[in-house]
Length: 65
Image 1 (cartoon, rainbow, N blue to C red):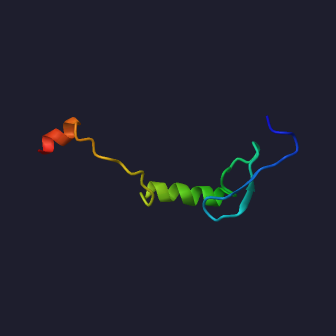
Image 2 (cartoon, rainbow, N blue to C red):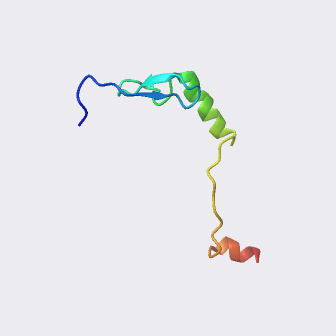
Image 3 (tube, rainbow, N blue to C red):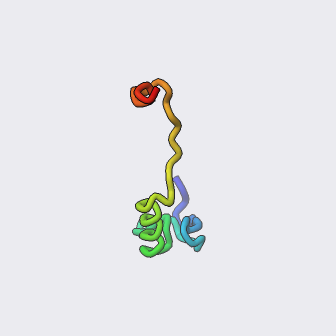
């Protein structure tokens, strides 16, 4: 357990501003609602993507052969 009184700071993933990592920050890890919504918009428009590896044993891969 962390000692009381020590606050950890992290960089906002969107703008890089220092943000206190505390439970009462509704936007964490972001610094503001604006940065949170911009990041959500980037995911929604597929600016960010999670890489996927093709599984050669999957039924979809066998149908394409």
